[in-house]
Length: 364
Ligand code: ZN
Image (cartoon, rainbow, N blue to C red; front, side):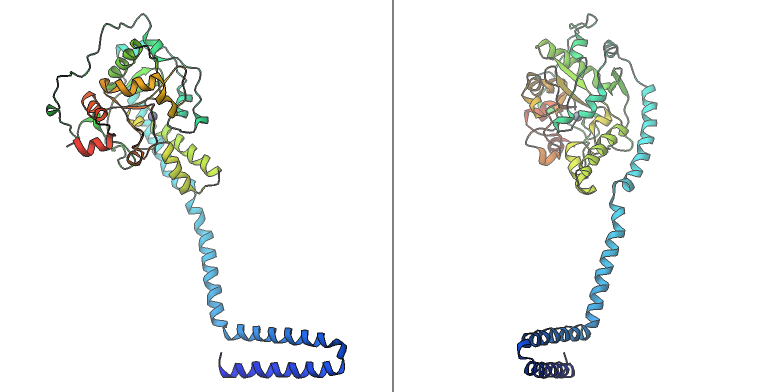
């Protein structure tokens, strides 16, 4: 504040004091009013003077505040769900066409036919798949594949020969070109040119046709050991995966989260569309009678224990093991099994690896 303003301030103060002094002498009883007037008048004057002197500074500040207010309210709609999901919806349509083409090429294997007339409420099962939240994991009204296999048409004599114990590990090498080993996760989405043929397990259950035989062999072996395994939602197209994922995101957003927060949380519970092994027909979710929830508890059931001990003999691995969540980015899923072939499954299981670690160590 320059000298000029300082002088004005002092002069005003003196004037007020002089006036109050005169007033107080005339009306001694009302002197408190005079004091009050003096305090208010001087404070107000100083304030006005301060604002006047700093006009430019306050104008600049107001402009900055205005700018931020306007820009943040305009940018908000660009962060919402609908805009970024438009492209996904187009992709879903494209994919469903591709699925239709694949369906025509389905190969009905003799064993697959055995289970064709059985029904599984896959709608319900798929809904529950990979959702850790137990409220989504209520499954009812289904036929187990084990029951299907126990029908007269199935002969247990066509016994499956597991990986020969004699095969030495030095003989085994793993190629990154091997379809059985394809690595699919958030960092490695399904390659655009990835091709496979869908085979039918039953009416609405499909998977890569090359996986059907080892899968059924595994079910038979489990049944022989007194364990009833129930397969659910093996193959799932992009549309189905996208719907599961966006439902989860919506649910989190309804809970008050932003889109980014909801997306991040959803991606831990449901595989991001385009990075699910169910989309390439190499993954199956397995439950058992008496325990039909897709949650951690399945791992403690007889079926869960049988699978973790024996699935490798049929080429399947527990894809998202406990303790590897920091690598897989997916929570422990004792029900989700992935076909990788017997050799890789044996190496992975015996060394306690997840598929990502196996790729790092063994795949050329
Ligand atoms: Zn799964």
